[in-house]
Length: 250
Ligand code: NAP
Image (cartoon, rainbow, N blue to C red; front, side, top):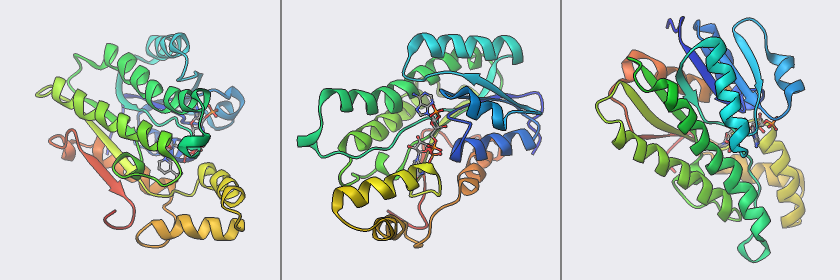
């Protein structure tokens, strides 16, 4: 696939799933802006066609400035991957407003700001892809994580709404819904689930792995491969969809 001449922006592109996507897009010739809060983490993986811009998706001014810097340097955004997110679980009765706002602020407000700023330069291009990294928690409830579940359902709502609003334009909007992927989120959750449920970390990891229908963790590259398909000309009529990557039906 040849994506040369196209500018892609991936939030949370310095680690995990976002980094695998950044590498695949750069390999195909795109100029790739990766964003995240930790500039040192971004700088470590930037180089060649991968460019680092520090940006906090929960901070409107930071997103506006980050997009302006990327667009001014590398041109309009043709591929936007709202991927930045945090996954923390807490039962409703233990949740306070601060926790709720943190999850919604990063995962949902962040996706909204990212898509809004991307559309400012993408609208009018003869090609455009918005590919949100949601979760299986965007299509079914995730036990013990109602705020995360709500944030990911919201992301999918946004994708579906925008696919209607920009219908018949050359821009498509889709969401990818992975099960458990082998990244820092799973290792962090292994520790926190074990502590909350009073089980060992090995048991906590086994619980997560069992949720994936094929009984293994998904690799970040498997998610990146789906992004590449959605970026290709072969997927031009796929719009407003959710694509589950969970080893089977959820
Ligand atoms: P990860 O390596 O922890 O990636 C999360 C990324 O988001 C980090 O690069 C982080 O960078 C960035 N981020 C977090 N808060 C941010 C903020 N306020 N502003 C800007 N960037 C922020 O874990 P991952 O698994 O690759 O997660 C990527 C996405 O996949 C998330 O949306 C997650 O919900 C989704 N997902 C993951 C799994 C899984 O099992 N791993 C399953 C389904 C969906 P900084 O900390 O430097 O900001």
